[in-house]
Structures are given as C-alpha cells and as structure tokens.
Length: 181
Image (cartoon, rainbow, N blue to C red; front, side, top):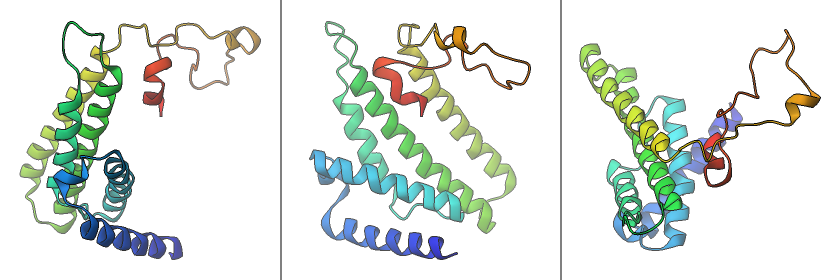
C-alpha cells in the first residue's frame, strides 16, 4: 500500500509541474519537452490502467505527441526507409492508444458506459492495435528478424522447455531490437 501511495503522490506532483511548465503543442517542439512527455505519459497511462482511472493528462496531450511524431516521418520515396521516424511514430500512436484504453476501461469500471457500447469502443481499440501491428510488420521484410540462434547448438530444446526461444523470426534485431521489449 505504501508504494501505491508514493506512486499516487509522485504522479500528482509530476502532473502539476507538467501543467505549470508546458502546453501540449509547444511541449513537442523541443527534444527535452518530448522526453519529459514520454516519461510522464508512461507513468500516467500505467497509473491510470492500474487504478481503473483515466490518464491525468487530457487526450489532447497524447494527440499532440502523436501528431508531432507523425509529421516527422520522412516518407519521401527517393530516400531510404525512415525506421527511426516510423518507430517513434508508432510509439507515439501506442501512447495515444494507451490513453484511450485507460479512458474506456475507467468508464466501464465506473459503470458510465453500457456494456454493448463498451464492446463497440473496445473493438475500435482492437482494430487500432491491429493497425499498429500491421504497420510494424510492414517495415519488416525478415531482414530485421533473427533467423538463426547459435545457442541452440550448445543448449538444445528438451521436453521440459515450454517455449521455443530459437524460433526463427521470433525476435527483432538491429534497428527493430527495441520492439522485443
């Protein structure tokens, strides 16, 4: 219980400071602002989901973040694929999705939404998640997946293994490595 009380206290303090120092659009204009938003938004989304509440920040903050990263993707067909820009855009889109999930689940826990409307809205979130997954998969032509595991020769699978960690294509490498977490 003590950790939860500390978490809530830090969450409130960070929220107050963020609102006093920043506004949604201008915050995205500097790298420091975006990093602070990234840190706080993870905190806000997880705290909201864990407590059955909405995020403390309004959706406009998450939308401003998603819009900024989306505008930064270099989609010029004459240039190489902008993996860093695409991944940053996907992460920002995922933050917006997390905020929307927290809001929807908070409505359900408060009884503020009929169950049929909840299912409809939840399906929209599932569709957006599947779209994100498709966007991630579209950047991967197996070039960024690990296909061979030399460790498999030193430690072959046994009947006691419940998963196959050596499945080709199951882990990303190089520029997509961070998607494994």
